[in-house]
Image (cartoon, rainbow over all chains, first blue to last red; front, side, top):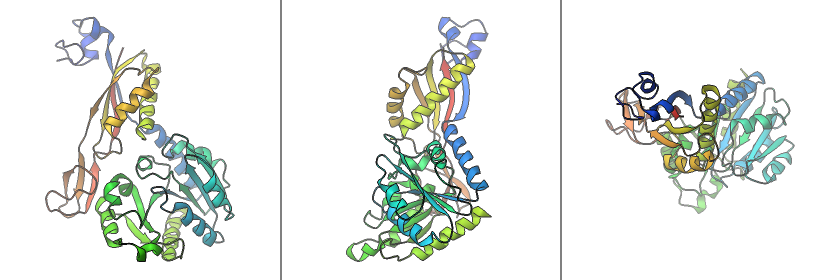
Length: 246
Length: 113
């Protein structure tokens, strides 16, 4: 039966073609769409990805809850790697340029995006921000997303991979509570490990929970304060950079 | 509440089709929101009502299909149903699962006048 008016014809357009349909069906019709809701974002993401490939640039999307240490990790990483290859940062925050100011203090170029009421970066915002950065041939672009473990999971920015940070003060169950984000991540960085002596935190449990939602995830432990574990993080970056620049 | 951005994208698609297919108003929007997608249907309905106001989709109802989550168990080498990322294999209880279906976010069709 037609779902539009209850006549005996097939749905929508069929109901109007057979001439038996009453006024409602004559007016209403079904338009086939069959399109991805995020197709516009994904078009911008594809353009960004092509631009990174042409510019031989590794782009990484850093995500976490607020306060997990994204900016602190970036400041130390930029300071220690800036002589090896070009580095830049796109900073996403709801308000202020505080993070971009911290990044620029290292000497690395940074563009701040204020998302206002938006809870995540999208690919178009990143495309706009790229216009404000120098070419990074052979280098690495870090995109620091809005601190939020929910919304940024679904928006491809054109990055080579998402890096999710989880600090040891947050609890081992974070991957189970926010599975979309940990499922989308290529690397899980357990941060602030210098605090472990003061906490009852089970690093192995967090790693196991991360792998439960994402069997492919790599897991590393770092402390941006003491520098512990950063060599492994830099080695991971070097590997992804080699993949990106070919 | 990224569902607002999702709702805006749906309204944009509807407006694009209104211009292309020549209709004035959307009465009903048929969506597929996979069980493993990052979108909450109730939050989407809430956000959509606000975002659609004054547009071609003003007052339209959302009809939302929920395609189930499907994952490949790496131990069993079969596709199994899952409700969420992190669910164990219902066959062997293993945790090594790769999602293969149920993440879609799609507009299927529009009922228009």
